[in-house]
Amino acid sequence: MKGKLITFEGGEGSGKSTHVKLYTEYLDKKGIDYLFLREPGGTNISEKIRSLILDVKNNEMSDHAEALLYASARAQLITEKVIPALDSGKLVIIDRYIDSSFAYQGYARGLGVDYIKKINSFAIENCKPDATVFLNISPAQAFERKGGADKDDRLELSGIEFHQKVYDGYIKLIEEEPERFIVVDPSGTKESTHEKIVNALEKVIR
Ligand code: TYD
Image (cartoon, rainbow, N blue to C red; front, side):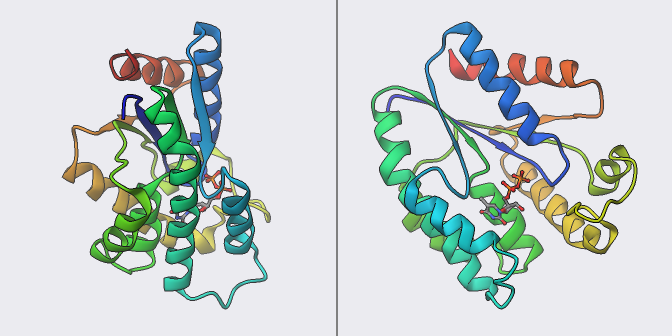
């Protein structure tokens, strides 16, 4: 595989989606060719799996079924889109990837990292990210930054314990693989955070 794979990770309210967008706009301006994908999703089948997982009506879904569905959506994305793009030398950017499964299903839901590793080993076919940008803001800070709870906000107080577990999970992953992660503090201005991301990724994309 000749291309590079860059993933973006972070908790709810971390500003991840904003910064992925700013980064792809930067690549556009520079005329750098890339493929942008999001997880879960990115192919017809994976988007169908996404609606199944994220449908609030499916609250009887077991933790194992959820983890396997994320892995299935990922398997389809890898085979259909990621491997062909990397093989052709393209830069691939994904909004969330396997670390989300480690943090959310492995740590926060308590399924364990080994289980997530096992089921995803079938899904990812050795496609490990070359670099992963992590937007490092605690759930409490992210919540504070939003200026309080609103009813449709997934960061509302009742969920903060879960989001703290997700965050702690990410921190453990970073400790295990510090060389892969680019840890960015997003508490400054949007522009300064974007600049940090661009600078850190410069050596990865060249
Ligand atoms: P999305 O609305 O895209 O959230 P965000 O804007 O925060 O990325 O929904 C994705 C949700 O799926 C998010 O809550 C994290 C969760 N998720 C997992 O729990 N495990 C996974 O493997 C992935 C890819 C996502």
